[in-house]
Length: 132
Ligand SMILES: [Zn+2]
Image (tube, rainbow, N blue to C red; front, top):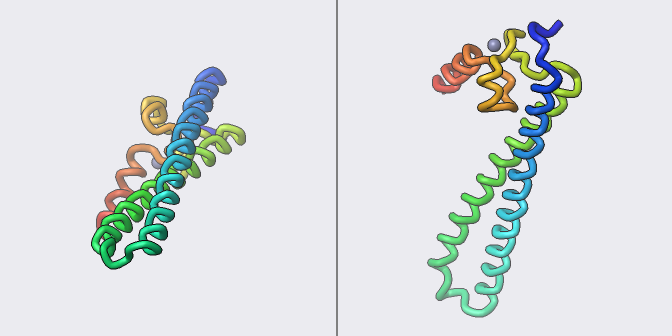
């Protein structure tokens, strides 16, 4: 049983927030993927015409591309969490801390609507990750 029932109206607000956030993220990802792709095309065009001159430049391009790819990865990770949060809204487990089963305070959900941990459990995880 959920420790606390969130009002339907509040749940709807969170659902809207999550969907809006997902839209922004997917727009960002599309845009970044475009850029990464264009970078690739520019690289291969450079290789065809004047490879030796562009060797130095290519290092920077690859670096920027890696950076873009890591941004895409973290955006995709966030989108996955948002999707999971929307699933939890559907099955009624939204707002419940996964490890301890306590209610996550609404103030916390308003800041990070896709979180699955209360502050105490999150702190514990960060502490454990800090050890590695
Ligand atoms: Zn907890």
